[in-house]
Length: 255
Image (cartoon, rainbow, N blue to C red; front, side, top):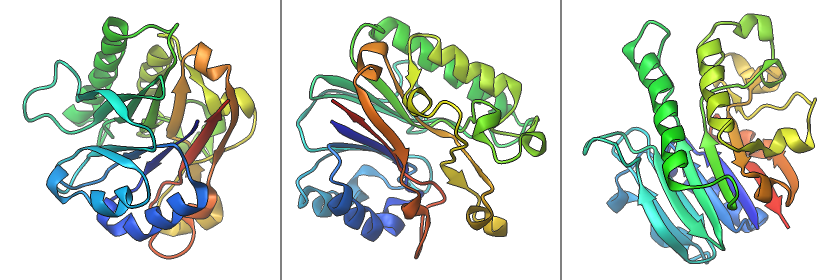
C-alpha cells in the first residue's frame, strides 16, 4: 500500500494539481486536509474518474477532510464520538485493505493567549481517548494528516527562532507525544532519524525557497504496520510551480 497525506488548502483551488499528482504518483490511499467545501461541493466526479472511491467530511470555507482510496472503504467514521453536532470537520476514518486509516486535521490553536490554544490541547487528549476505546496498538492502524505540531528541533528550520512559538510550544509537543505514546511510530523518523525534513513553508517571505520550513504533517503507524514501512518521503515538488498548497504531500509505502 502506498499511502499519502496532503493538506491541499482548498480542494477547488488545488484540484488540477491533485489530479495530475494522482496520475503521477498513483497512491492507493490519499488523506486530504483543509478541503474547505461542504460534501455536496466536493469534486468527487473528477477523482472517481481516475479510479478512486471518495469519502469526505467537509464544511464551508474552513477545515474539512477526505479519504481517496483505490480499494473499497469500510467502517467509516466521521468526527470524534464526543464531537458536538456542529463541531469542526477534522477527523475521518475508514478501514482500507485491512488497515485502519485515521485522517486528522488538528486545530491550529490560533495564538498562545487564545482559548483555541487550550482547545487544541484538549482535542489531542480527546483523540487519544478515542484510540484507547476504539482500537489497539496491536492492529494495523495509521493516524496521518496535518497535526499542526512540529515534534522537535529537527523539525523546524531554526529551533531558537521557533522556540515557544505556536506549533512548537512545549505543551503542543507534549500533547503530540502523549498521542504517539498510545502506541504509534513516526514512519518518516523511523527511516530518516536525523535528517532535517519539512512539510510546510509559509507563503510569506519566500519561505520555501529560503528553506524556512517546519514538519507538521505526519504518518504515524502502530508497530505492526510501521514494521512494514519500506519508504517515507516528502514530495517537495508539489510545493513548487503554479498555485501550490503551502504543504507538500507525505508518502509512506508499506510492503
